[in-house]
Image 1 (cartoon, rainbow, N blue to C red):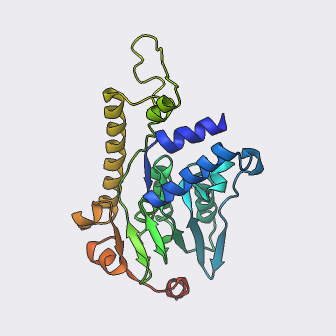
Image 2 (cartoon, rainbow, N blue to C red):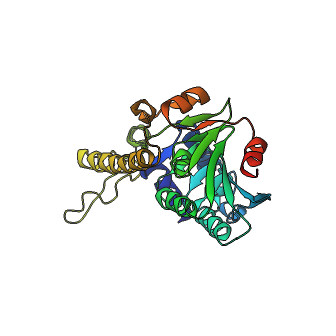
Length: 271
């Protein structure tokens, strides 16, 4: 049943992720299905994200594909668990020795599920600690959703920010089934027109397409409301789903400035 849950997550749920990162997940999943290259039982639940201490600053790494919870195949895809991330923030909040927090981000994003709540946890931590988001690679989509909840956002000269947007991916295999001589017939009771939506070998109806589009639009509106509330004066051009280099990130209001190393940022906070 875990595989069915993962398939539903990948192909039916809204994602705030770069297409490249989503392709990594699809490729690993396709390899598992076609070749049984590994067992879902080969992977244990991921560990709570550790944080490092430098003076009075805690450094929390946010790396890989962002999921609400992850274990098994998700861990093989390089997943980052928001559930355990929130636990880490709780531990930091309870420490009187920590005055500031750096979210050290390297992620192309992930699922919408769990991201708003994790962003709220970052915002809550900011009431008692100084929280800074930083990347020397990329903070895209759901990763930027998290980053914009920090009081300030910095990036290195060669890093990128952005990909503000949401999408959902549906794999229509009906033609492939037909070529193999297979026709899928679905019988549903009553008015349950959304039941069995996405069943392999079927196509989406117009009502189902409209339902998925509405879901994506709601998630996108929520994403935008968080970004615009936290990044006052952000340019409309920054909300198009594009990635931006460091100069444009600062110009458009995605970031507050360029700091070329994590060590420099730590030193600045511990002055």
